[in-house]
Each structure stands twice: as structure tokens, then as C-alpha cells.
Length: 238
Image (tube, rainbow, N blue to C red):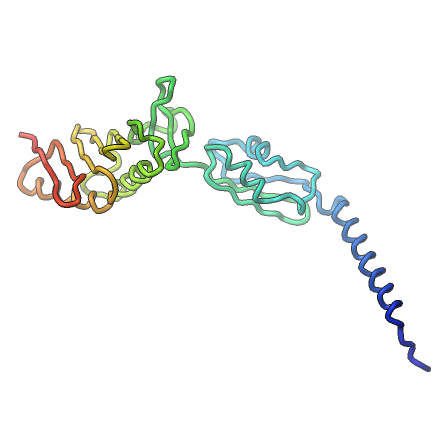
């Protein structure tokens, strides 16, 4: 028996035929019901409804689980100020999971209607404050409440106060943000502390040392100014 050798043209035709056949098969599978969305599961919702998340995603039962862009879906969902992050997972062939991380309130702000609203650490107003979620948040005041730099300083104060033995987060009544003078806080017992601009962590530790020293000699401060990098100014209650 003699071996037949395919001519180059025959080989090319055979290769094109095989590739075309594979393409047709793949296209048929993708366009068929095998890779169609049958279920959209939403996880992590609390204040936001699953219905709202799915509506924002613009995903539709019956469309392909392959041909939608995850980045675009995330962008649509994160357009809600109530949502800080989103994870999209495809469970082939027919399911998509949307896991959302809701924005966590860090402060209270007063809205145009005179009502209190929760605000996230990114400066997004979330929803009207209510008794179920509580009012146990510092109130942001001042013309700098939407300034990213000042908000970051206020957030750093929140972080430090959560672990402080001197001034806790519950001790802080108000946080004032001023574009010219920086950040200051007012405590529940009416003590005022001026931090100025920048280096909040370093200034916070300086403030703690001042308060601890004052307590050690039976004094209580009414005002502390640590806006300067070099020295602090303290007024004590008589």
C-alpha cells in the first residue's frame, strides 16, 4: 500500500473546513440556550434591594453569560451612592452572582431640608438618618464637608477615636471642616480641639499626651490647639 501525500492546497482546504466547522459549532453553542442567563443572584444587600441592583446592572435573563462586560456592569451598579464596591461572578453556563458591598455611614450631615443624613467616608450622602440605624455618628459641619482632603482627615480622626483611651468616637459631637483652618472637633462635654491642616495622626497622639498629663495633675482642658507642628496651646477649666 502506498502512502498518499496531500498536496499543500488540499491541506489548506481541509484546515479551513475544520476551522469553519469548529466556528459554526462554537457559534451554535453560544447562541443557543446553553450559555443563556437563567438566574441572577444578588448578595450582600441590606439597605439596597436586589431588584434595584439588578435594574442598575442592566443584565437580563435570557442574554448571554459570556458576552456582557463585567467592568461596565460594575460601573452601572456603583453609580449608586449606597454601594461602595461590587464583585461579579459568572457560574457557567446559566447563572450570574452580583455581590455588593454597601457604603457604611461615617458621619451625619444636615441636608437642604434641615434633616440629618448619613454620609459615607467618600463624601456621598446615603439616606436620611433614622432611629433604627441610629444617630451615634459625629456631625460634619462647615464649608469643607465635600473637600476630599478634609474628609480624609475627618476619617482618620474616626479611625483613631475608635481605638483611643482618651477620646472615643462616642465622645465626639461635631467635626468642623474649614478649607482655610482645617479640622476641629467638639466633644460631647463641649471641649474644642483644633487640629489644623495635615498630620492628623501625629497631632492626635500629641493631643492624647496633653490630656493624659492634665488628668495626672487633676486638671481638665476646655480647649486644645495643636494646629502647630511645634507646640500646643491649652486652656483649662477652673
